[in-house]
Length: 412
Ligand SMILES: CC(=O)N[C@H]1[C@@H](OP(=O)(O)OP(=O)(O)OC[C@H]2O[C@@H](n3ccc(=O)[nH]c3=O)[C@H](O)[C@@H]2O)O[C@H](CO)[C@@H](O)[C@@H]1O
Ligand SMILES: C=C(OP(=O)(O)O)C(=O)O
Image 1 (cartoon, rainbow, N blue to C red):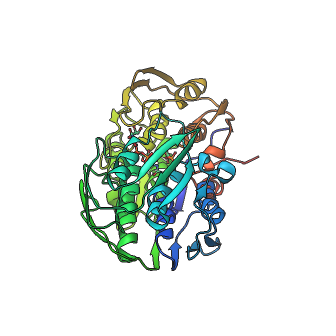
Image 2: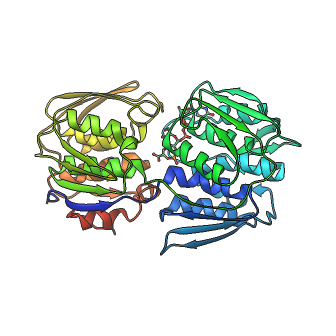
Image 3: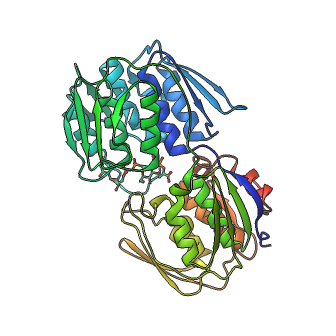
């Protein structure tokens, strides 16, 4: 049976991609860091465990969504324990803070969504420019720096993770660091705000040139994580795909502009005010083209969910993925559900169909899994999504949130 049109209000959680680097940054001081609005996600648990394994005290008050991190005694620099790092992408973000705090570390090659090769050469280039010696052997990365010294670093691509890692290494390096062609995503700005509150000297975060003057010490901080723009965008698409009417609360409008623009082009009504947004649809979706780009372009993380919407649109949509070379794993599963889609290199042509049909499908990554869930909401008949662990990496209380707005969905 189809889920009904989703209706009601849904509150957005703290951002996964903002909280993970901020947890890493909290070891830059030996004082308490209180991180607020922390989402209960497996990625956050894994990041917390990485810290706990090296002797950092971490107290997670899930009821109040507060993580209290105190890294006054980092007992080990070996972060390879149980290979937790392989489970998440953000584990690589421990390199910068550990070099800064301990002068050395050993971590696993990072995991995260399998959406391309995801090399870390730009992280290494940046940290090496600051004086680190980095070697990679047997799936482990070893980094040593007697002293970090500020440098001018040009990123060949505005990598989010590399910008974050370099910022965290540079805040206590000697002298000035300039990151050129830096990423400008909102999560970079949130990290910079966290570091500024700790006493760092950073200028230009949110622009393509970030200038950091090293300071000798950072102190404890209290900081609230920004709302998750990907979760917000997902619920906006959910309203559209079910012909529903949702009010999405705790949202920063500037962070979701590309989704607003594309939904409006698709014949969806969007009413924005302050920190909430109402998305209404009569179910008649018009096909539009999208090309993923770094912020403020259309986010690669919303490519798969938006493709689910385009599967039932009137007309043909061309979806171009420019950020990751292998981010179309969901296409085959959408085709099982009746979608008419064809991948050609970095592009996918989607010809809208009248209706999708329920099927037994497999999530292969976080956002691809969410695309299947969204498709399942509007499909005729039952959809069974296997491997929802991928979805749970990045969506807090996902099943309960969908049930609260009228979705016919159950977790087994
Ligand atoms: C935990 C987290 O915040 N994840 C986000 C982060 O991932 P992540 O930080 O991994 O993404 P990057 O911005 O680094 O990657 C973007 C592109 O740069 C390439 N690259 C990256 C680093 C490097 O050293 N060399 C290199 O070639 C990647 O292969 C990719 O093609 O930003 C992505 C792009 O917005 C999002 O999809 C992810 O959700
Ligand atoms: C790709 C993603 O996450 P990660 O970088 O953690 O794999 C994502 O959030 O869509």
